[in-house]
Length: 367
Image (tube, rainbow, N blue to C red):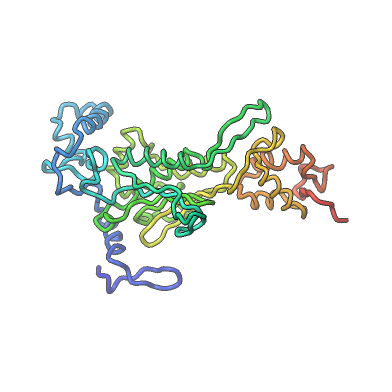
């Protein structure tokens, strides 16, 4: 297979495949495993032997028959060590400092002041915060989450029944952690992407997580979270599961979307380009604190927005689309019903509150 004679459908035309795209196709077809390629520049002195030993012990607990084998044989069977040299997976998981060997296997995390890269704040700065995050995969995960939590806006909501206050982060932390974890486990670790870090970018209205390598194998965007996918890095995925960092049960995407729905936010958007996969979370921009207990989770901006939108009578589906919420029941109970109770919204058919033709309005109802 050569670049000159190989094409890929991109947009509305056939485009020549790059060397990387040819490699990706061949890697899937021939089942290459980049996560177990040997780290030729390292020896076992670069590995935290105690941490790797803890991993081997966990494997032996679940597989008692392995206990009779020499430690070195188990390390070899687990694709951690080959010919007295650590593999890529071993380096990323247990090295004292993986970036000694792979300087760009990092996460570049940044907060920008506007809606696109390059937009500057009033003082001319292009970044509110900017950090190169290094370390093992677990270090990358933990320190990226610390960076995001530090930079997320937090609003206080009031439980309408108990009156208790609770802090809500700008994005659900469970969902964001799943997305960061997915990028670490499923990114492309081939030699073609060694110069490409993962990017985590907080814009004013959204959070983007971008990792090198598009969807792997036969998986397509419409099948995400619905079918068992081909695994690009099976050794890494197994190790992360054994270490209790991920479930590795293909539940990451459903978890992300469920957490966003529970937070009353629009679902994450996934995109797959020729050499990059991205997930985007959208926030509710510029949210003030809730006004009172009757409108417990609504900010003043959201209330005014809904009222203005309903100057013209609107159906349940129209209001849900306006708010970016998929679940009608959640939207009604948390948004429309509180405004009905305070009289800020009214029904066009109050005598038939559950009618499928019901609409909600805030202004004078035209006759």
